[in-house]
Amino acid sequence: MNAESRRRRVFAVVAVAVSIATLGYLAFGSIGENLVYYWSPSELKDAGVDAVGANVRLGGLVVPGSIVHSGDSLALSFEVTDGSETVQVIANAVPPAMFRGGIGVVLEGTLLDNGTFESQRLMVKHDNEYRVPEEGDARSIKELVESMQFEETGP
Image (cartoon, rainbow, N blue to C red; front, top):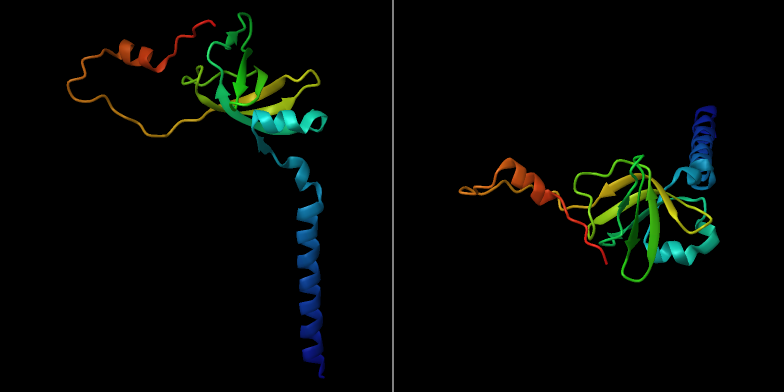
């Protein structure tokens, strides 16, 4: 074996070792602390105390009639359900214009010790399909804007 072939072999072994070390760091290193998991209310409740303090995304439907706006701040509270479990949410964010009861939401935040989910980010799920008013639609701009809003009804 000559010197050139030995140098290539050493280079290949070093390259493989560096690749394995990099993959190991990514798989088992601090990257896990930065991941955000998507959970349903049932999964959040099933996790119990393990979910407290974890940075997660909670997804579900806003329970109609559960939205309470805080008069003196941006905070609002409401309930999110997946049909099986319900989680109380406190959101410290301006809700999107489409936010209302019965709509799908994704919330990024943490579960508090008392079982309330505190969210810093509120996103509304929608189908991304814009529909322009059809020809002959005589509604005014005010009526079109009001059609995007939802009146909350009490229980």
